[in-house]
Length: 156
Image 1 (cartoon, rainbow, N blue to C red):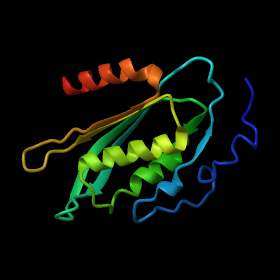
Image 2 (cartoon, rainbow, N blue to C red; image 1 turned 90 degrees about the vertical axis):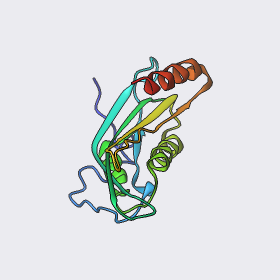
Image 3 (tube, rainbow, N blue to C red; image 1 turned 180 degrees about the vertical axis):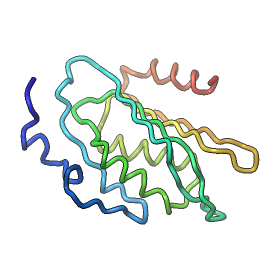
Image 4 (cartoon, rainbow, N blue to C red; image 1 turned 135 degrees about the vertical axis):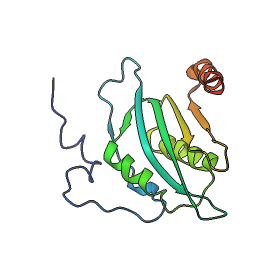
């Protein structure tokens, strides 16, 4: 096993910095990544954020939910502290649940260019209705997987 080199960790600035800044508004620029050392065989990474918060764009009331991100990396992996800070930046952001899930998907695709990525939102009920959006990105060889995952999500 080899240690990560300084060059590999060059883009990781928040982790271990000793000073964490929590953004008050949506901040995709806080996302950081590092090289995937295991590109030869596909594998999945699952990230669970059980305390996601955003604001209703119409009422300004807080919305609470869980965000689950699963992806098959290609050349890069997302650094988890930067992901935490990024997700925290939605706290004062006014967007509908569907928007939040798609924004997260798009930002992570832009950062990572993964082989496959999905973002599922499990939002707490408001007005007696839970909203559970699911967004997926895939490279062509993962099209069948994306279709199966979408179908499975609908039937959960």
